[in-house]
Image (cartoon, rainbow, N blue to C red; front, side, top):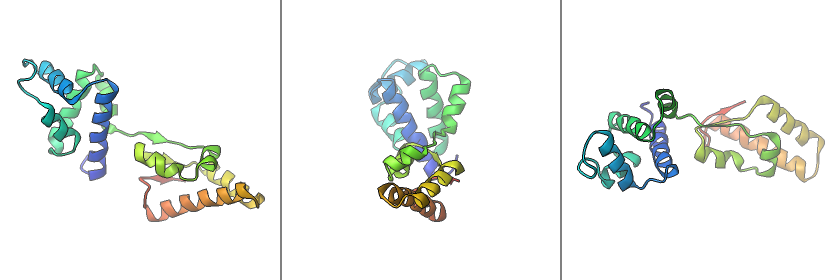
Length: 161
């Protein structure tokens, strides 16, 4: 893991997993206590969960806790491994990008990768070249954002053309 972005991403995924399963931090602490054979409330507590989800633990502890979260929610070993890899990929299409030129920035907040297929870039380029109105300007704006992000890596985790 090692990379700060990956650690932050896993922390947010742990919080997301807990919340999607309707657990408060106190509930999660109790689940982990039960998982470890302890009386609920005698081992983990809300602040322990908060430190883990906030990234205020060692990488080793974070990974151990991630496995415990997965086990507490009944995830299989293969589901746990997939969760730990943590890649969430978004592949927007041409129409989605034309509707919202800021979509890539928005997707980067939730996904670890945003992939822009070459066919989408080609379609945007064709629209830009063939339309002088607002659609052409919108396509140009999206292409410019893609080019800027892939060249400078600002605001984009990964862009694949």
